Length: 233
Image 1: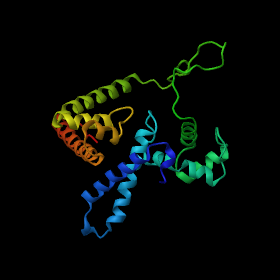
Image 2: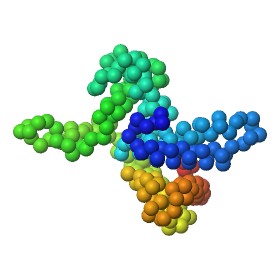
Image 3: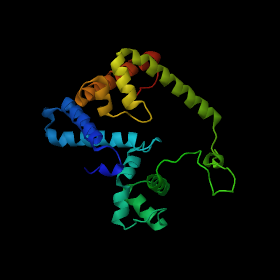
Image 4: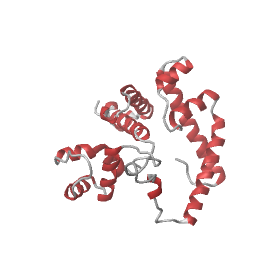
């Protein structure tokens, strides 16, 4: 319930928590002396947070652990210092939050603006009526163009896409469809919709998704080793 403020379906959050619980039970080793409840808590939390980061915005949010921590703790940090007003934070508040959460001030400013305003179209018109037809994208300028780096990154991305396409052969038609709709779409389809589509329970859809993802990961790693590429996450 602590994650209900992100505007995502509560049933989906609970479903992702169950995925984390399944992973915890699968990986739990009682010989290490930890309680299952303690171990599972971290997997459940990680699964929920990954789902929120994947679904909250069309644009990827946090990539580092510090950025993820910022996303999930910014509101609490603002409430703690009484910075509840809309818009940009006062520089003193930015500095305090950055220090408390271990991130840069620029990251605090950027994340606050994104969480306050949400996604916005680059095709949206800037200015009021009669001031022309300028759009947000017309104001964008790449000040750090690096063609060599761009080409290298594009080549690596293309190689990984080829790996993904080849690895998909390890999945059957249903696994491919469910994994694509759940993890490779801009707007992931809910378990409820897929359960209706395939006339099975949501739990069954979730199990197929987890198994298909694990099979795909293993196949991509095997292909990467064969081609002498870096390990694929």
